[in-house]
Amino acid sequence: MTDPNRANDNTENSAPTGEPVVSKPYIMPDDPEVGSAEALAKELAEAKDRTLRTLAEMENLRQRTRREVADAKTYGITGFARDVLDIADNLQRALDAVPAETKEAADPGLKALIEGVELTERSLLNALEKNGVKKFDPIGEKFDPNFQQAMFEVPDTSVPSGTVVQVVQAGYMIGERILRPALVGVSKGGAKAAPSADFTV
Image (cartoon, rainbow, N blue to C red; front, side, top):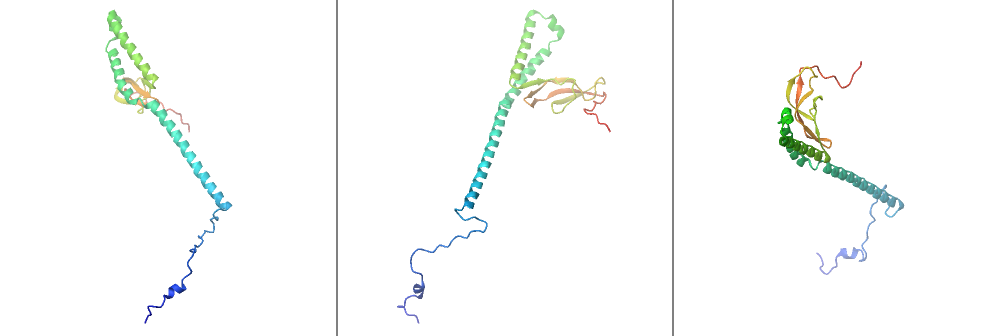
């Protein structure tokens, strides 16, 4: 039987009250001891590595931002330029609608009107060119699907097959990019175009 007046044996064997005993943390054999020269050198190397990575990231960000700003300056007017091309096309159509004989025999009032339309077209093309938009006319060149869109073929044996013989609508570049391809007619039936490079065996 147990005696209720008897003190618990555990209290007799317990350690005296005071500061708790803290065990020393285990250090891996290859980890330097905290506060040692090796630990400080390791921290310094890690900090230097982080700093170099951050500097490299910042430089990449600076270059990417510089490229994006340059692209925005060059290509930011793309939508506006496409809309203005319709005006340039209409001015060209107006000039093409008047035959050369009619221009020569026209009265002074009609001549002044034609000259005014020509001047307006030139001013518009100059304004576009100042903003990086250039007109190109590929007549006589070899057909290039990157810059031209073939609308039809023209039987013509006087030029190599695949040569642009007619331009329905001029093309435009903005910077290094195509703004609008030229609509062209391509020759068919002539000799094949000569290869660009000679290969000798």
